[in-house]
Image (cartoon, rainbow, N blue to C red; front, side, top):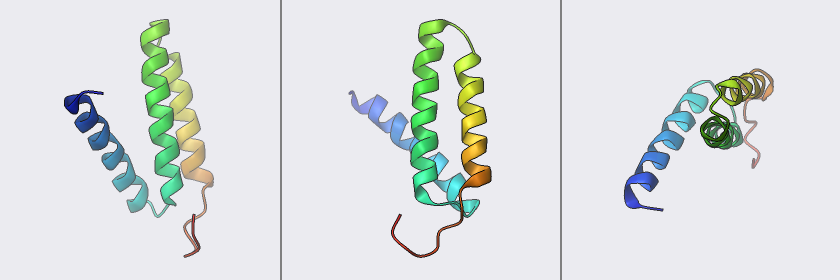
Length: 75
């Protein structure tokens, strides 16, 4: 992976993590949303369809709505 791509992905992951943390959700939710984002981007390019992005958005919303705030235990 080139340095530019690594930098971009790190930035996206950091932005997602900051938003999820601000919502009081566990860190694993940010990791999961980042994976959904990556998969949606890849599948959108392959299928030339925005449907993968819509599916990822629904899954991310579900995670955000249903993940319990951290309890202080390891995640």
